Image 1 (cartoon, rainbow, N blue to C red):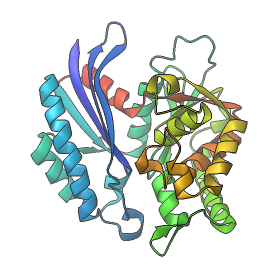
Image 2 (image 1 turned 45 degrees about the horizontal axis):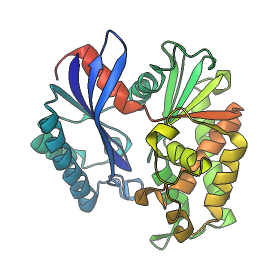
Image 3 (image 1 turned 120 degrees about the horizontal axis):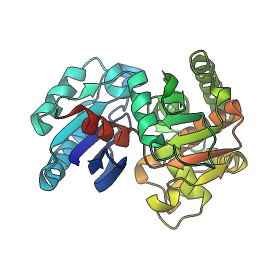
Image 4 (image 1 turned 90 degrees about the vertical axis):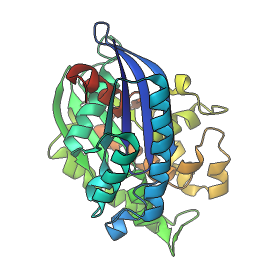
Length: 318
């Protein structure tokens, strides 16, 4: 057994998993799993740089995570950084700050590496299920990018494309520094066209339509699941491996794109940090389901974090 700490820092959120890994049984026992909205990628699509306030929010979360990791006595820690820090000109400032706080260097991974971690984390506990047909298509809708990975017991093809809930919101739904509330039909149409172009790009590498089971990861998918179930609050156990029909995803996406900030914020399961970006994330999910012709999506709470944790258990200390 190994006690490990995995950190995933994306465009919208930074997440921590401290767990005991049992390679013999293929099980991860969670000790602490949490997420903080930091919006590290705020403005990166426009400026090419990480904003000082975004860096400070991220470093504050890192300081809190360092205390948790130390309290649990994790033997190994791995920090993976994804889309926003890949794109930023001043990513060295980000790297130095993380090293100073956590003592480990963030690995700015490629989209393909990100997809492989996501696939391992999402499917390791699904491989024995007889009610889910293979191959799996794992779709990780992040803040700045979306990863597609197709595989059976191993990855067959993977691709990352630059559409995510934050990037699509900033690119299409912001006018005069504020999110349009609600967006216009023209804004939605432009966003949908952008998403479809990204799916065309992904499909050049990943045969999306060969998938038999669609597995959706990250906050946009899990929030849609929570809304679909009308949960009184965010309930990870109820969301994990829930199934949402394409028709229900369409209904939710349509409502989110018609709703106001106040209406979205009133949803009991809505994280405050997702209120302004969830409509874009839901539309990405719907477009993927339509392209794949998937009649349902399986929502997973286990994702890149779990894949990072398993890589630590397999690779030894870092």
